[in-house]
Length: 256
Picture 1: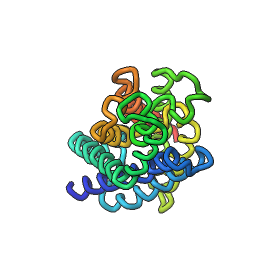
Picture 2: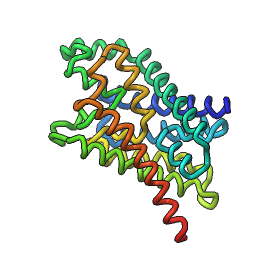
Picture 3: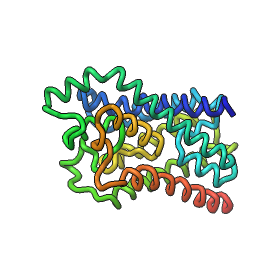
Picture 4: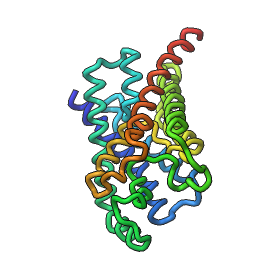
């Protein structure tokens, strides 16, 4: 069990380091020409995280995936809870490592843009850690995005991701390239849905870094409006999407 928890912890930390790091580089340094490049960093991050952890654990790296595997009776409730906790702590560590590297640049960015950390204006830097709707980088193009629309984006994205994981991990389909295909699925979903909700599809990826940013000075700015929408959009919706993916996979698998 200890090895499994270490695997979930390390894998999620790597995933957050690469993924949130790509957002930080985009915000602070304008490092990318478009969303596709950010999505590809997420692809590599997810892929490397799975390769790094799958000899230690099932490499779920996502409570929504763990919930789906619980419903599929591949893990028990104790493992689900412990995996989710390890993933959450891994998300905090990944965010802490990023902050340790980038905090001088974050402070410089805030200074030149007259941003006071913790105010509503600081959401643009808080979005390097937790997620917001609409995506602060696309708010002019998307206009007003409501809570239900953001929930739909996170629900549908997680549903597709977990559904694909089930099919890719079937014995007849699984190969050494499976982690890459999962990473590519994440990248494709980010390209489509990140302008709406930043494309998290993973409660640990969102809440771990969001919790860190709260204590790193962003305080209430780390949590989107309306109140508790961080829970409905970025925790509840992905969990529901993962659960329904299990149901859909079970039904379609029986017909094949």
